[in-house]
Image (cartoon, rainbow, N blue to C red; front, side, top):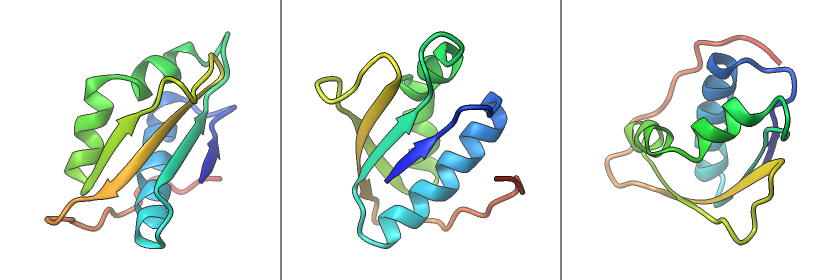
Length: 96
């Protein structure tokens, strides 16, 4: 699954990524590519490659692994696995 975050602020991006990643894992998709951009996307890139993002994903029942070899300055690639104690994520941001 690819998620393009151009035009999102950090809060919107986190909400959308969590929601869509949950849907993807439930449907059997285990690759997540986050397109955050480079120059103005550095805030997003920093967050989505951080330990805090890994913890957020674990809270919603998804184990992620960052794949630096497949990533670039403008996008980050992860593999996703559903955790056994999965708690469904509810979308609170109504947007794109």
